[in-house]
Length: 290
Image 1 (cartoon, rainbow, N blue to C red):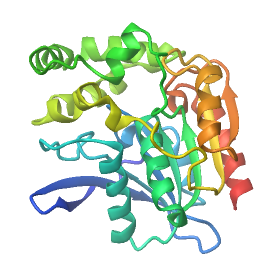
Image 2 (image 1 turned 90 degrees about the vertical axis):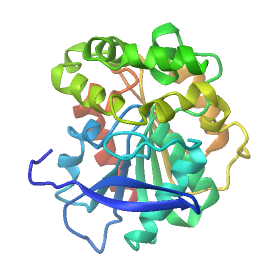
Image 3 (image 1 turned 60 degrees about the vertical axis):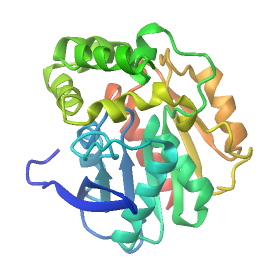
C-alpha cells in the first residue's frame, strides 16, 4: 500500500475498567453513490495483509481498515478476547466515523467478527464479503493449521510455545500451510506477522482462541441469522484448515442468501494468495451490490 497512508489511532474504552489504543487507516475519497468499505484481517493478521487488495479499490471507494484489538499495531491488553469484543470494536469505529452503513470485507476471524456484528446490528451492514471465514470449524483443521489458528491451551505450555513461535522461522512455517502459492510467504510477509507477536501482551490475544475456543465460534447464532442483506462467501479451493466443501454449507445455513465463489489455486489466505483473482471477484461483487 502507499507509503503516504498514515497510521491513525483512537483510544477505545471498551469497559469501565479497560481501554486500548486501536490502529486504523483510511484510503480514497468519499463517494455519495457508493458505500464505504471496512476491511478486517484474520487471526494473527493486520492491515498490511490487505496490501494487494485495498489499492485496487481506493480509487473508487472510501475505504477503512483497522487492526483488531490484540493484533497488528493495536494494543494487546489482558482481557477476554472474543467475537463479541471484536464486534463491539466495529460498532465503536462506525460511531466514531459517523458511518450509518458499511460493506464489510473480512478474512477468517475478521469475517466471523463481521457476521457476529451483522447478526446483532443488521441495519449497520450494507453487505458482507466473507473471505474464508472462521467461526464454524467442525473438526476440520489439520496439525499445522491448528497451530496457526489456536495455540496450546495450557497457560504454561501455551506461553512457552508462543515464545518459541515468535520468530521469523516459526512464523514462516505456520504461514506456509495457509498459502497455495508459497512464494507469497516472503520475508516481508513473515516480518509483518512476526512483529506483533513479539509485542507486550501478545500472549493474551494470541492464546485466546485455544484457551476459550467457544468465544470465537458462531455456533450459538440463530440459523438463519438476523442479517438478511447481501452476503458473499469467497473461498480458496485449497484451504485445508477450512475446506470449502465442508464449511460453505454451514455458513449457508447461517446466511442462506449468501452466494459462494471458490477460487482455484488458493488456500486460506486467498485474498493475498491469489490476489488478482480475488480482486476481480470483489470488483464484480461491489458492482452487484451498488
